[in-house]
Length: 113
Length: 113
Image (cartoon, rainbow over all chains, first blue to last red; front, side, top):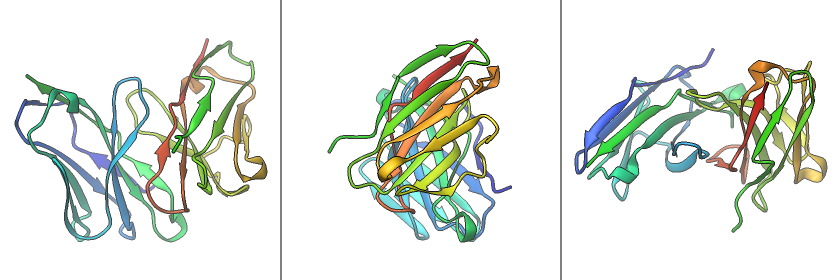
């Protein structure tokens, strides 16, 4: 069973701080990794994708990937109350699972003023 | 560009009744997915279509769930008969190709009484 595990939450940070969200995965042949944001009562929204080792920055968001450690993270700088949501890590399988996304259980982030 | 459309947004039925959900993907997206999301969990893939062919339906409970994608565009997901444990949000997503980021519709919240 290929699994995706996210750090247990909920995570609470003050406004302006850095929020760090972590995810580990079990399928070594996974090639693509995604972060989705899901507001309460809404559907998941794609916010970041990363395909190679290292960092990828997009505005206040930085995704980090380490395939050797099977670890992917999302950093949110200068956190805002509007960032309060559930963040879902999704891993795209390789081999016979090519194109199939497996989601983690999500981490609830609360940014308090 | 219009997003993924789904209907209905909400549905309440009695157990053992049947229900159908409809999805229209983003124009030009060949791949369509149906997910089930139970409260507090990440989405779980039920079925994946490439054009009008099934790519993966390994997690679809085929004794009660069925899905089709006629002409490679719209899709319907049916549950017959429904059970209490089918209460969840049913999400439709699409992507331009088999692999890559997926974009979700607003979902259908199903309550089975």
